[in-house]
Image 1 (spheres, rainbow, N blue to C red):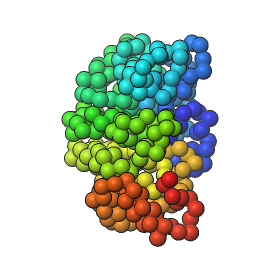
Image 2: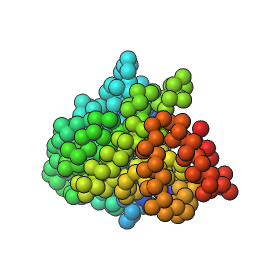
Image 3: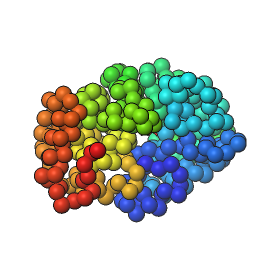
Image 4: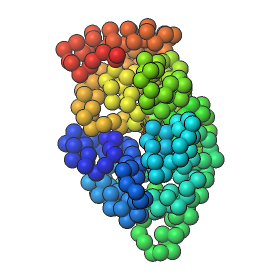
Length: 311
Ligand code: PEP
Ligand code: MG
């Protein structure tokens, strides 16, 4: 499941989530005047990690900025989506980043924790973030505090840059998680929060699908795990296309979507999903793609209202 607070843990467990594929930690920073302490981070992560153990909990480091603005943390920017957000923010405000990393590593002592960096666009960002992670590990060792030494580190693939050089980035990380919400926004140059261009925000646009296919190929070649944690994975129609685009190890989504996605996956063969996706990749307009996919879904799942029309 994707979660934002510990309040969502019971629902995620009830819905059958096998771990947390995306913990959006920026919500810990919202609606308050001060910064969360290392201890606050730690208690929240420890509770989550213990609840899901031995299943993994992937904690994404803070992704403030962009569409997740905290006026205390972020300055007003002309183009926040292209500004100081995700890993860029953490590399600039390293004290905030270090507190969070310390807490994640400490929580790792109590279960299966993984770290994920958001909005990566190049290798240097991963290298710098990992240098800081090593410093934090050394400081925890010096302080004699137990922590997870061999923690897995992954990145969100949610910028076109990261998607295009996914083969290069794969060698520096343990896993990828595809953030389709931002990836679509950036590849189509469509603000994900702007109603006036909402009709142009098309998850099945050929350019988005080609990029996702490329990411999946790069991950498979490098033999690293790849999951999808953007909203495409939580909609049966788009999730079906994802399945057919390449090898995906896991999908993470809001807990309420889990049953319908499980149902879709259990009712289609991988071969059929591949055939549908490969036909979709041969179509060049969103309209053709949308019509074709809706007909396929209607033929297979006509009795199920969960499999609604994409638009
Ligand atoms: C994404 O961009 O797809 C994603 C999962 O991250 P967020 O929606 O939090 O930006
Ligand atoms: Mg994102």
